[in-house]
Amino acid sequence: MNIKEIIKKQKYIFHFNVSTLEQILSYCQITREKNVWLCLGASEKERNYLGSERLKKIIDFEREKGAKVFLNADHCKSKESAQEALSLGYDSITFDMSHFSFEENLRITKDFVEYAKEKNKDIFIEGELGNIKGKSEVIKESINIEEEDLTDPYKAKIFVEETKVDALAISVGNLHGISTITKPNLDFERIKKIKELTQTILVLHGGSGIASQDIKKSIDCGINIVHINTELRICWRETLEKVLQENPASYSPYEILNQVVISLKNKALQIIDFNF
Ligand SMILES: [Zn+2]
Image 1 (tube, rainbow, N blue to C red):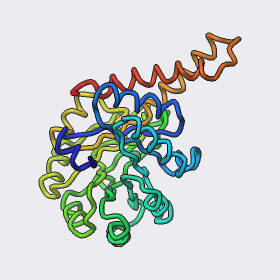
Image 2 (image 1 turned 30 degrees about the vertical axis):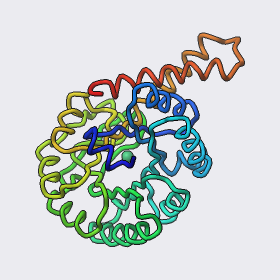
Image 3 (image 1 turned 45 degrees about the horizontal axis):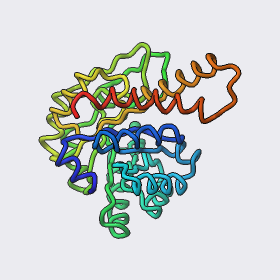
């Protein structure tokens, strides 16, 4: 099974970020018990913490034990970090050159896709076009998303055709993290237009602050991969704080952290349950 086949089969897939064993254990358990596929992703910082190679080996082990998960190198901001993931055999790479101009982004992404597909014809590469603001945490300020931050559907068409990416991350009113002030306001017509013109797999980053009915609607408009990170990070932290507070005499990591595994599992199930 690969990501494209799964998207054909189930229309969309959730992408959860991982950097600790508790996250991996809980999400893998879900895929075994619920017979559902998930993308597990790690950004450069997340990979640096666990080690890119170690993470790949842990995921391979989970797969041998029946977990239905793909491993994505999320937001590779340089060719070097993407190359590392490629050589380690990750299933997919979010090759994020969105910080460059449109022309540069297109040129660098096109070169990388060519290079990567030669090394591994099955590698799934996601490009990114548009400026997705924010960061994967609770942001206590407002975030202004301007027209120029949004993905232009006509540029998206050119980008996808030229670069031959397998998927495209788009900026359509979404933001990374959860702002306590700015509520994301998705531009559904723009998603539809991008889908119509590109006919490619579309990726929605920053799904955490978006209401589930809006996520559903975005899937109906053409989104296929939904990234959720901050919501689960909040669950991880709040559970850990609560367990430590309630068990001041406990020094057993397996007892404390097992509560985190259980909470993350419940939270992740709530997120994916709405349709599976
Ligand atoms: Zn992202």
